[in-house]
Length: 199
Image 1 (cartoon, rainbow, N blue to C red):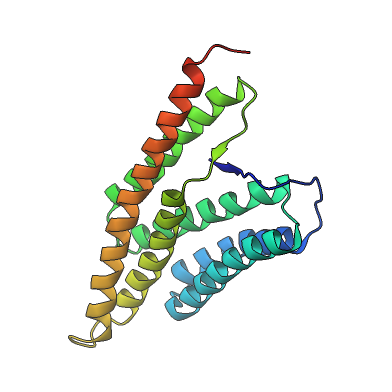
Image 2 (cartoon, one colour):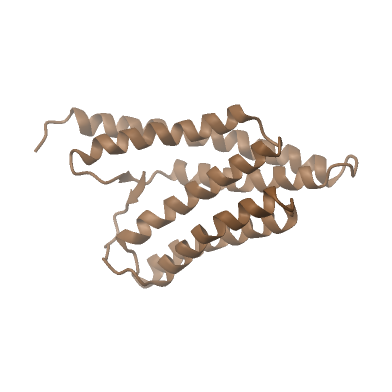
């Protein structure tokens, strides 16, 4: 749902923020491969950290240079959702997180996808971004790498592995709550729009 912003938008395609977002998307299959095939958890976490850095950079550069584009506002949330989905699936297959958590988080996106489809009938391509949505994504993209690190460090006793898992679960649980809270706010906005008379 993170599509519309209040800043001036352009139709430019080849911008630094768009290139960064596209590179983030290209990193998703590599991340999954690192998690599932060689189980190279350290490299997978590094890739997630780089993705998080480029996520911050693309928005910062776009605002600082006036390179906010419609394409960028689509690519950025797509990259976020793809990383979250890939991380969820990878960690669930590895049995680091339960499948019910995967269903809970992906279920929220399915609900909002249906709502977005209804809004498109009114000519609305998205809703204003909530700070809660950004905070939720941040928490999840911090929590899941920590859970991955905790699994990678298994067997080291009460140390980095235990702390990593505890902090990772705290971020994951808080992020899930914020993710649904933001989703409910989007639903309230969408309901108000859909109940208003069509212009």
